[in-house]
Length: 220
Image 1 (cartoon, rainbow, N blue to C red):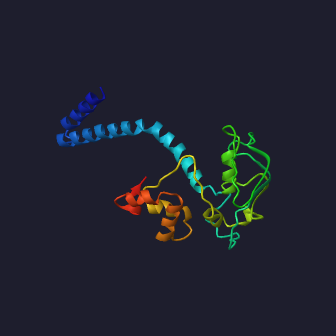
Image 2: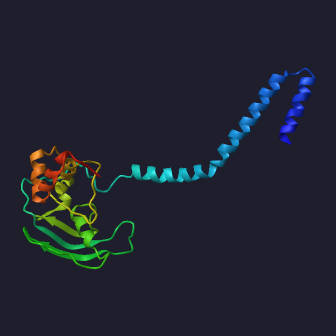
Image 3: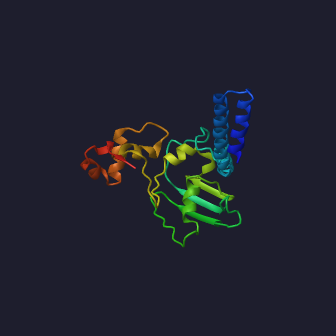
């Protein structure tokens, strides 16, 4: 009925000599296409509302200032590391689960060259101990020491560069084998000699040498 009304009114304007027939068709086409565009835009309104909420969450994450700055230049960088580790009365729970205590007064000591196994059910805090040692989090109470120095006093990049972690789910980046190995110390340029030495210590050097591109083989 709306189209018929537009044509009827257009015919009236033509009959009265107010508009030309071509102009009526032009206006009618503009109205039709404009209405279609408005209809399509309005159909996206629910998606826009969802996208706006999601974008707000993403922006909050981007603008969030971490409590531990992984790129900070502050902190001690001892010239030597023996590898003695100690946890003294450590208390911790994750920020997202403040009502669920994970570690309650944990104390342990691992001397240089000593092997320690943490055994327990899922969620008892085994991985949490490693994350505190890497300083992904700070304990709520107690101290974590390396060679008698509290890890809060150490430079974060230096601390992590002196650790080797093999996680339960290994992650390979979309780059070469050599670059994946070198990523373990991204605070400096790692030489090819160091990369191969690390591969030999991990017993994967012979396998890499069998590949067509050797250390330049892309993985991930």
